[in-house]
Image (cartoon, rainbow, N blue to C red):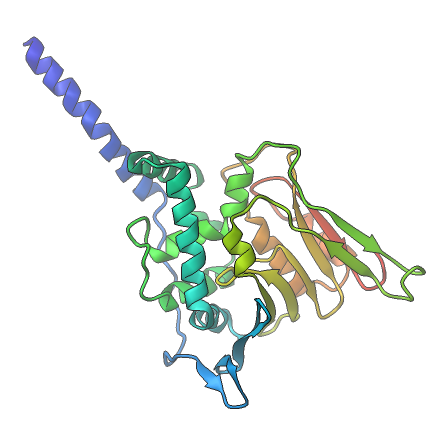
Length: 305
């Protein structure tokens, strides 16, 4: 009888991780929205510049060690072109992130547990994204083929988590000594212009510096904007739109992180794509619900910051 009790107890203990993993998968289940990107095609070299690869009206080329990328069209077209033009760089970045994960968490069971805890805590993250943002990510997932990393998570939900990674990691990072610095110079010191500068000195992996890009985003029906980012990343951490509005992200450690709310990179992108002035941007921010606390520097062409 005692042996039977021990056997039942052992079976329960062994089954718990599997049950927990199944619960995590169910809790964070994400299905990509249906997207139509028309006829699938590959980028081609430009006739006047072999370094520039074109896909419709979108293109990418090198400026020294930096990518210059122009994306134009619907959310689906933006997402597909982002990956199609920069696939190799996106694979290199994600591979390095996985290698960093394996280096600092060398045991596969521990890595699986961390991923499952994130799934359970943050649930269906994509429901906190706008419909157009989800369609853009779904088009990215469609273009990201072959996908070398499906053993960890399917493409679409993995992309959703990667685009929320800043918010998720900031909820664990507690050091008050790490941060970025920005400044604003305004008239009359600048001959009528507004000058904004920043550094980006967070302790991220070297691959993000090696593969950085300047994006020019022309989404249908929205204000064009430029951002400094990485291949595959559709959010914004630093950018300026055609109306002269600039938004810069800094991590903050005031207040508590939450398992709900909107990833900040999506919020900043919407600010740049839809608002013209600092006051308009602040009015939009009043109605947002962030996942974790942040500091945003907002400035416009009039010097209002």
